[in-house]
Image 1 (tube, rainbow, N blue to C red):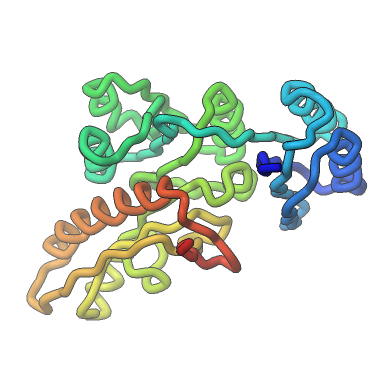
Image 2 (cartoon, rainbow, N blue to C red):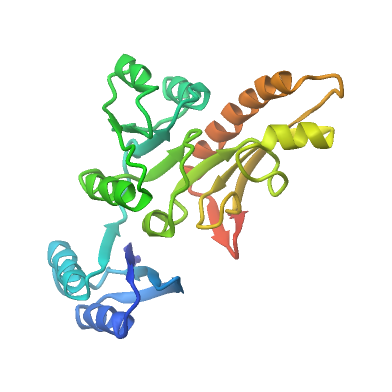
Length: 282
């Protein structure tokens, strides 16, 4: 019998009996656990499970409701996602003030990037005009309190079936509480050839160090800033006579290319993340 894989994500404050409670419920209802990964950092618990529901003894709705009730009882967020083939996967784009990556993604959706963009989230209102031009709903979440801001976003995103989140020069750091709910489903673009020059001043650091090659990196987001598994990189040679502004201008073109490439690669379903490294299926 062909396997029918679903993914269960569990996030919340760590407590005893979580794994036993969930696995017992799954076994009782004919769900076979294929893979399980769990960790606890700063008393925050996360578990990611791949399960086979091909011999499920109850309906999918009953399975979903049962996990929801367990989540209420444990005061944890438990979500199950069933595999499905979409004609166009749904991608959330998150932005701040720089428009070049957003414009590149929107332009490519009219050519070879076959995705649906149901909404754009901004940490400011600066790029709303682009969303309005494309008739895409734009929402601002700008609370300076990160926990309150992310809680509001997570609650709002329950209304959407998001397959991938793209940080198109989104300049706020996401917490583990947010990232773990979309593990290996958030792609960021960084203006350097990581692991060199992490942080917000990458071009300046590279310029001051006098490096001969600079570039951009698309990587999965993890709880460690700019340390996630690398998907793709684009490099360009630097002439020592170049100004910092010239480097930034060329760098923006690299950022656009690498981010669009990474999105395409993600939806080709041939990426596997293992030990914080991206592998490509043969």
